[in-house]
Each structure stands twice: as C-alpha cells, then as structure tokens.
Image (cartoon, rainbow, N blue to C red; front, side):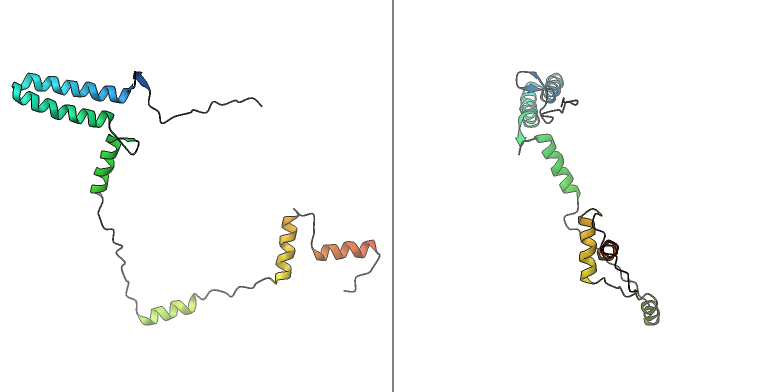
Amino acid sequence: MENRFIVPQFIDAEDKIWGPITVRQFVIVLVGALFIFISYKLSDFGLFLLETIIILALVVLFAFYRVNGAPFHLFALNIVQTFKKPPLRVWLKQYIELKEEELKEEEEDELPPKKTFLPSKKLSELSLIIDTGGVYKGEAEANKINNLDYNIKDEK
C-alpha cells in the first residue's frame, strides 16, 4: 500500500539559519545588539560597559540557556504564571438553610423506584447472544427450533 500522507518528523526542532543558531536565537541576539547600540549612544563609557554586561547576560540567558530541555523564555513565563495564581485554593461551600418540614416533604416525594434485577441465568444468556453476534438466539428460540425439528408440540 502506498503512503498517501507525509507525517512531519521532529516538529519540535527549530529551523537553523546559520550553523547551530536558530531563527529565535538570531532575533534575540539582534534585539540585544540593538539595545547595546542604544545604550552606547545614550550613556557615557562607564555606564555603557555596565549596561552591556547586563544586556549580554540577558541575551545569552534567553537565547541559549535551556531548562529541562525547554527554552528559558518558556521557563520564565511558567514562573510568572505560577506566581500569579493563588498559592492556596479554597472551596467555599455555602450551606442553604431549609426548614425541617420542607426537607421531609422533599424526601418523601423523591423516593426512587425500586430496581428489578434480572436473574443471573438470563444475564448469562443475554451476554451469550451478544458475544455470538446474534447467531445464538436464546433458550426460548432454541426450544422452538428443537420442537419443530422433532415434531414436538408445545404444551403451553
């Protein structure tokens, strides 16, 4: 049989554009270089060096560092989402006060009907009918067929 559909493989692997550098890493490095350039134009040399070290550390962290195989930006996003959720979840159950008379009336009115159960012989017969796909018709049908085969009259 000929394969009609191509199933994509390695969908979690990012596209490489230059050596081991992916598109995401390249864009992060470009944005970091832009911030370094802006800091060069707007500050003196001492402040520029301090800002460059901080920006380079953040660029390397977000572009190349992985936590448990996932990029750092996903890890940082998960941390932010965790801190936004409440640390303790409490279920506030509210009680509704009803008069005892109303409760008794409701209990009397809403009694479920008693269930009738089939005997185990009948259940086993039904399961046999289902298991055979309807080939076996049940004892009543089998008795009718046997009576017709042997010319026995029903005494009912």
